[in-house]
Image (cartoon, rainbow, N blue to C red; front, side, top):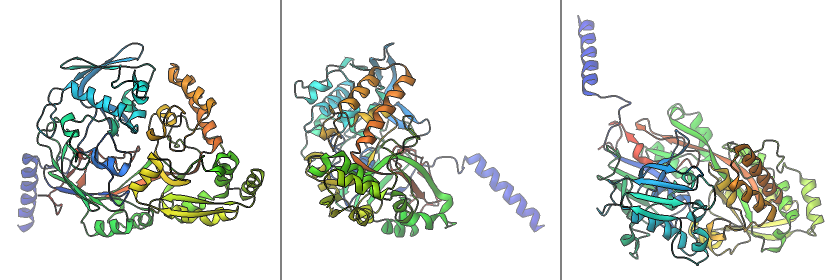
Length: 533
């Protein structure tokens, strides 16, 4: 009798949940989500057009949007602020039908004028922001960057619903305009002196507060133009650089998701309560040490090559990164179409490194300062690992540990460094990735070691106008080979990124461009979350 009643009760519950629409696959609205900002002790700016660091971008992308966004499932950019786009037969003219239901967080409706103004601002800011290289191909961009024009000739308002963008060379505009650094901002808010710390955007979440060195709090935008989203009421980014601190907070269920560090990776794989709830992805990031050619030893390619040969990258990856990486053969990641697996790269060869140093006149070696943030995967931890290896060829490394803001100023802005250790995004568009090192791309727009090779430039210029996909690919492969042969950096690895999440979390995606570039409007939590309401 009791068994029969139990079966009836279970059946009744099943029917009740079915009728009420409750399902583990049905997004639930509400709750607070605690995430991490793991790449520095604080932020530098939340002005979307001025951002140069991933740390700032992973937060700003939650309250900003541009003409396109990246779709991790489709692995391509998709329209965001436009209903449709018509592209001319020659690929040089884009006509956008702009959405009319988009509002900034101050309540004002977004207009075509806002898009025009935003793109013009990116093009004319000094020093040039990183968004400039993502706008490559837009007619009039060079004149704006050179200070000869105050607006882009190729960006025009046709009418209240229509935007036209004209190109002077063939590029896929979508692959540039999905980046956070080309987002649409409200002119009147940008004019405020405190805009960089109290931003206003038009994305799924609204800015609430930034507690320096501690956290950034965002809240749901009730006027978001995508019906039903975001699901979360509040989104909190905890600024946590140390993997050990993130681990403790995650295990204590104070974090809903966390970026997994090298020290935690192997432990998490063996933990049955965590291992099923991890998303792994091979990121489009290249970890490297960049050389400033103005520092005389690095003006000689033989010295730069010797540095590469002298370091046993495989050993460092195995011992210090705990296998959480893929060895770098060149700049482009293995997932890139232009990556050539036949390239030799710089396998560990101490004798060859010594011979190159002697040939370059540096047999006795030299001292060099390497600037880095406190990070075990792409900062001071890696420099400490390769320091004794370089001593074997006479290079005495002095570690300069700095905060992210200092790195931004010294390396990315003023070119005041000898060498640095970092991790740069590459991206899915090989041409745009390689154009970063074109001599016409200025230092402030990403060419931080001021790479300049006429043959490299010529190949990229040909690739820019080549319509045949196979021929274009061949040109890009040749350019990449030249870049690797010049050894402007020590090629270390491509990151294998892992996000661990709690069992109640849904909607996180494998973001290969940067795993922390999560579009959080897609994320929701079950009512079992301790922050469900």
